[in-house]
Image 1: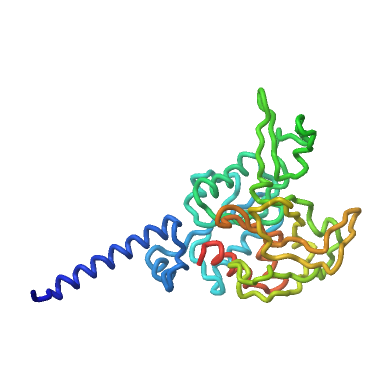
Image 2 (image 1 turned 45 degrees about the horizontal axis):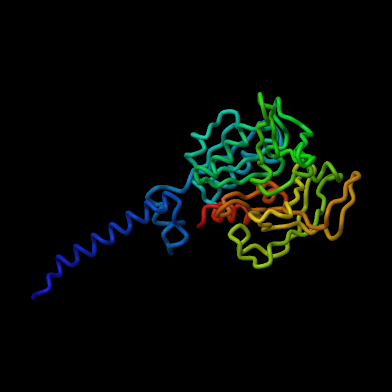
Length: 307
């Protein structure tokens, strides 16, 4: 039987087209990262455009959303679609349009807003970057010093743990467990940060191959200005879902304003299924403005999106 090369070619072409369409669908749904297939990111984004990024902010707190947006749009990072929105103007429906959401300069946040970001990740597969002291100031009618009557354990010793009194019970939100972290305070509220203070050495996790710090030197000096500041957090000892990617080595234990700070402080911590959540204690734009470490912004964007 004579082989019909035309028919064979058409069948192969049809299979290739179906495979490409399937790959587009899997990438769009998040089931496959474009970085899993060589050169696929370039093809995918040339057709659909780069993933949209949303920077959410409030009225006060650590971070400079406009500066971060400019850095993301710069040729160094090359993000074409970056939006900035006020926290009070958002709903879960707005967040669902974005592959990556960054929350900074948003110290005050109520339970419902924290729940919205949890739902964005847990129900919609979003990727969330939480920065500094975002969400550490409670909203109205939220409880303080709540104690579990069964264990006599103080439940609200962390501003990321929230509670409201309902008619017959309490409404509890464990955003602290969502991040895997306890907020302690801001560095410059415990230590005087005039001009530019040497805070210590940034050290990457041992393998150095985590997407958020890949290609970054294993040890870098960190200098902090008073108006820049960063947050001090502690990882939960039993937080099996969180991973310290970058830490600050202060050289020794620091005693400041009556508080003792451990030698090593978490600076980047990931958590959640598939590490869809990343906490940055020091805003990324400060890394660039004060230390010229633009690589952290590049790796945040490409690392969070699995490229």
